Image (cartoon, rainbow, N blue to C red):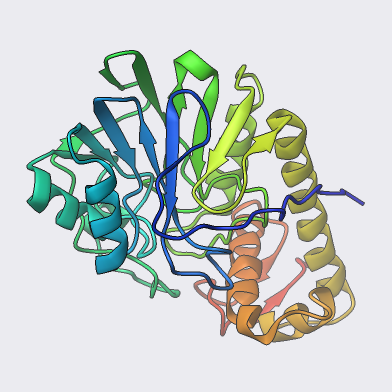
Length: 300
């Protein structure tokens, strides 16, 4: 069984911009919860002329604390890893206050409707001023950030690599305190697995997720995530072989002792695995894969 070394030793000091490395500062929003851990960590890169990564949820106290902490400095870029409500909504408020441009991969789900599945956490209002694609660079005095497209958690998810510190701002793609929720339709398990594999050849020494503490030895952490997802797919196939046909049945059997608040997310994660398994021909669904659909193994 894959053993993920979760990192949960993280205490948030809300409303204070604190240095975490020579080039990086972080301020945590007061939005703790089952999906955000202690809260959203907004990062500031550089000094004097800075980039802000993931300005966070639309909480007045968080935006004001960030702006006050950066008085006398210039925000050259507002970068967004992806369009979920705990990451991107405050970008508009920071832009209004500073005139700084926003940058990201694009609007949520490419600006299309939600379709099948659950997308209640999506920020559909964010449209970046500057579109970033894989390999695009943003820089300032003494710092250089490179966008790394990592679809899966969302189709527009970006990580940002800080060359000077061999650090990667990993957003929600890779976190230390928890695995990521992959929720179709915009969340895609096959893309997520490919995006995890994409990180392995990189020489990053440290990840800074938007939630929780930094991740040291990140390649080993990513390998454990990949192994965990393969095991989850195997567990789903085993439940189908045992006669389960619905996602609630599988969740009850696989996620023993689960926090009830996370049951819906677990169901969407199982759905993401099933979408991939159906596409591979390893599982059969009577229609479009959904939380309500029935599934079975193909006839031999």
